[in-house]
Amino acid sequence: MPQFLTREQEIQLVKIAQRGIRAGAIKPKTKPQAKRLKRLISIGIEARNRVICNIIPLIIKQVGQSCRDKRYAHEQIDDMVNESVATLCKVFHQFDLKRRYRFITFAHAWIWQTITRYKMRDCIIPTPQHHHYENYQDSIIQQTRARYKRYVDAARLVKSINYELEGYAGSK
Image 1 (spheres, rainbow, N blue to C red):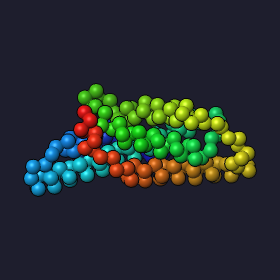
Image 2 (image 1 turned 45 degrees about the vertical axis):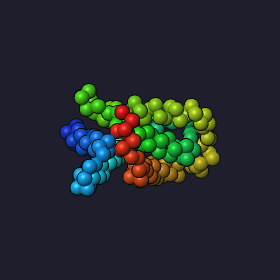
Image 3 (image 1 turned 60 degrees about the vertical axis):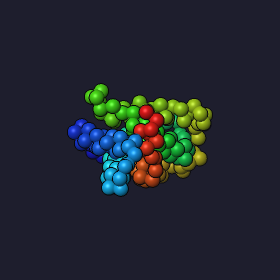
């Protein structure tokens, strides 16, 4: 089981990320100021990605719980995980530290909402177990490999998202 960030680590990273979001709303007047703002934005993006990468195991767990009673194709499960990560990247700027709850608590509701919307939108049809696996032991091995692959793929997705902080700060 991966270790989640402590409350203090999470608060510190969220503050850094929010500082980067605010820096994206400022128009630089001089070249050194532009360089400093660009650095603040990149540090903010790195902090946001670290916080979201820390939550990926929770996303995988919630997707697994929502699909526990039925068999879904791995592509559908991967899509649910990837959409949850993308949603968290989009709504990160809405998190408010003044409410005194952790980002992981804030993320929990957004993840469930994303999973539910995905299931409703795509009308996911469960696939029978015998289409994917020949026996139970192969099933366990493939599920374990798929879980690890989803974790790695979601971590890569967070790093590859080029979501501009300027768009967030400008929309407030």
